[in-house]
Length: 208
Image 1 (cartoon, one colour):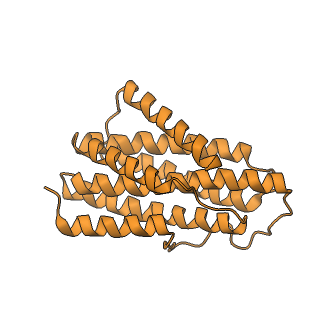
Image 2 (spheres, one colour):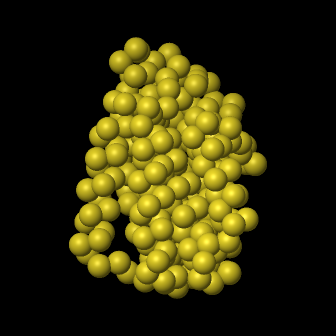
């Protein structure tokens, strides 16, 4: 049964994620790095990639909040709540970088949030081990995705690179922790479907 207090807290997190009223307890990874003189095309490209990363963090908020709501064990529930807070830092960092680039967040973030929340509820309903296994696979795919962005970002955009590099390190730790906590390997059709969904999101968010 879903606890009403947790549901209210999750709704508050949703509002903050979608309205951009988030903050980070850790320093901004790009603080102190000089803003290089990017060409208009490079700036648009970097903005598109960072918009994708921001949308990914919006999705992460939805996933973890939903998974925490339906987690069966209190320890697992606490793990998801803490993970959502950590991902909120990434949300704040990508949002700040978008502002610095003079770009915007995705118009479709409410849609991505709703879809990810539904997926999180479904994953959580399968039990805590599957719930944690979903985190393992999600974070692995996000880590791969961020590594690809390191290759695609403009070579001189050191600020965006610093943000993405720190996010990638964090996601790797999150995956390892979820696995250590008992996450089970997901069936390959589920993993493949997750990759297809991620591809649709990243392609769309880059433009919209």
